[in-house]
Image (cartoon, rainbow, N blue to C red; front, side, top):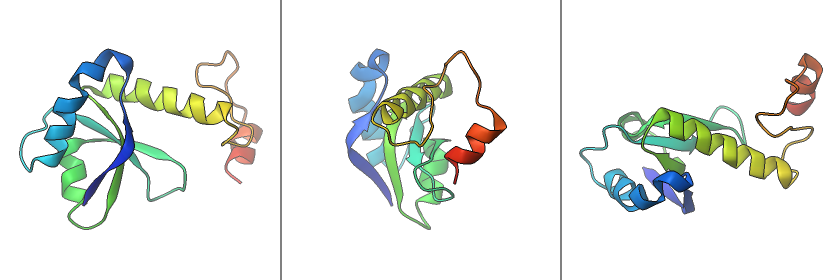
Length: 115
């Protein structure tokens, strides 16, 4: 089952479309062009971007928590960037840097962050 988080998110540019995207999630049809930011089953605390149609198929066999919605994959990537940056500022990632930082992660930093 698809479960919308209480604090469902989108980027500011799409805030006017959030209601329509939420209705698309609740309907059993439609939703072309809507991307969901979902909690990953593979790794705790990680997120995935999946098309709404794929999320519906997966939701037939397991519960899926939808954290955010976007009208394009590009906007979904921006939403994830914003969410990760906010989490890093709150200290939720050990050793995390805000995305877009000038210096890329080193292999050691990536290893330490995934311990």
